[in-house]
Amino acid sequence: MKIKNYSLVFNNILGLAVLLSGWSFASPRAAAQACPAQAIDGVTVISTVSFSFQTGLNITTTEVATEGSTQTAVDNLVSCNNVNSTNIVSNATDIATNSTNIVSNATDIATNSTNIVSNATDIATNSTNIVSNATDIATNSTNIVSNATDIATNSTNIVSNATDIATNSTNIVSNATDIATNSTNIVSNATDIATNSTNIVSNATDIADLKQDVKELRAGVASVIAMDNAEPELRPGHRFGIGVGFGTFQDETALGAAAKFLFTDPNSTGTAVTFKGSAGWGLNEDTFSAGAGIGISF
Image (tube, rainbow, N blue to C red; front, side, top):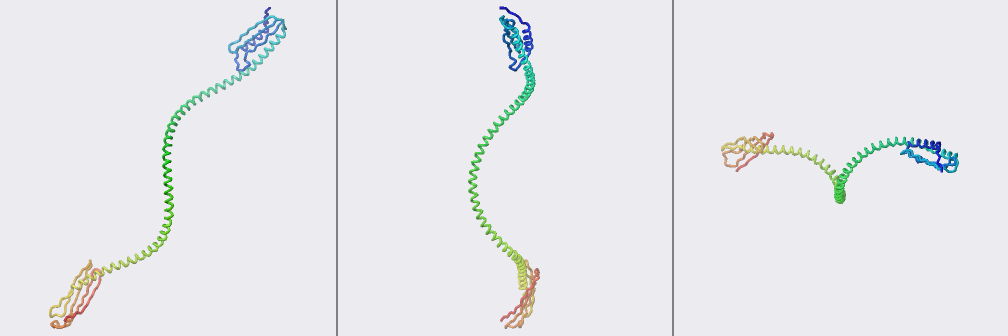
């Protein structure tokens, strides 16, 4: 067995591997690409090129001398190299895309950081609100129990009110009848009141007249008293006498005058005929009273 070095082939492969050693790809095409063993000038070349794009480049070349075609082996290696070149271009495009996505992701991460801070604030606020809501819920629970009691009370009152409403309905019908009766009576009363008003005016006039009459009657009584006190006494042997009197009654005052005349002989023991007359004047009501009479004694 003889070992031969084919520097041309491996230089191409080495250059390609060095180019790839500084790159890192997200695409599956970034995985290690291995070319198969080839026979060059009767020597079988098993060439394994291992690429590690994260840690560097490792190249291991083993030549085993066997029978084969040098040209075919070279062509196969070139073909393998071309495939890797195509993958490199594709990887470059993917890397550019990844770079753009990384910038976009950085922006999104910054946005997410801001949102996380905002969410933390909102979560703290929500925690406070949850505590407040718990208190409100407890209060509502108490109020619900209280409301249930009130509703039960209201239900009882509604039943009672229904009875009262029925009673009121009956009373309303009765009141309607009474109101109709009262309306008739009101019309009748209006007529009576109008009549009474007329009568009151008439009575007022009559009462005023009666008051005046009472005053005049009182004045008359006072005049009679004055006239009675004015009656003269005839002295024995005299035939004529006059007198003046004063009288008062219930705040009424009067003056009276009287005269007496004996027609017969005052010295006779027989029948005697006497004439008497008197008059009275009311001082308050301007009234006049008079009287006369004949007396016979035997």
